[in-house]
Length: 145
Image 1 (spheres, rainbow, N blue to C red):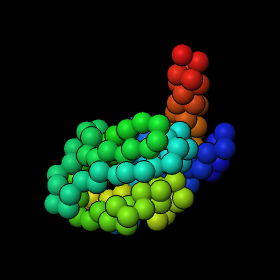
Image 2: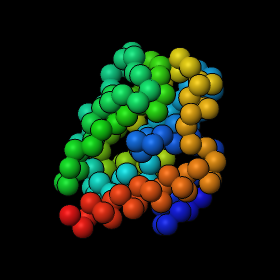
Image 3: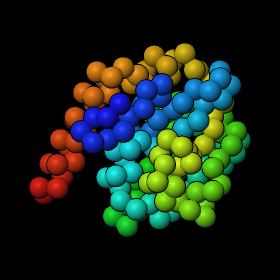
Image 4: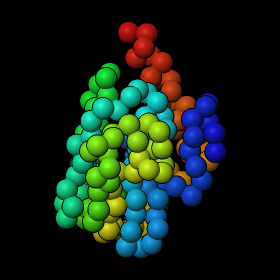
C-alpha cells in the first residue's frame, strides 16, 4: 500500500521504530527498515549489523544505520536469535535505499515469542496509516526547528 508517497507492502508487520518483519515461517522472520526510514535518512553509507547467534530483545537496539545526515538505530521488532545477516550491506549499504523490502533486508531472526510479536506489531492498513501520519508530522516539526 502507498501512504503519502511511502511504500508499505501488505503482508509485512511494522514496528513503531521503523523496522519491519516478514514472517516466512514460525522459525524464520526477515527484518529490515521501512521506506519512510530510508527516505528520511537519505543515502545510507554504513550499517552496523547484529551478529549471527546474537539474542535480540523486541524494542532494543541491535544495530546502527548511518547516512550523510545522521546515525539511526535498528530496533528489533521482535525477540529471538539472529540466524543470518545480510552481509551484502557491508559492501553496499545503499541497498536499504534501493530495495528496503527486498535486497536491503537486514537480518533473519528465529523468534522466541512470535504470537506476542504478531499481536503487538502494526498489521492493518488503518493502524499503519495512523502511525505513519504521526511520524510524518513529527518529521515536519523537526524540520521547522
